[in-house]
Image (tube, helix red, strand yellow):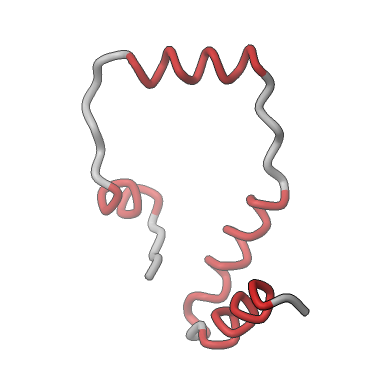
Length: 69
């Protein structure tokens, strides 16, 4: 096992039982990510350049009822 995988395994093993489901959901989403094609990347860049209110990470977590360390 590579050192990165060992570190990941250690982090997973150290998770409190209350955070295991959040970690499962997060890792499942990572595994399901789609590769962004050039057209989509261009649209994302344009959207990021538009003015708008920034939402602090803690507010996003609160809205989504997520807890991360």
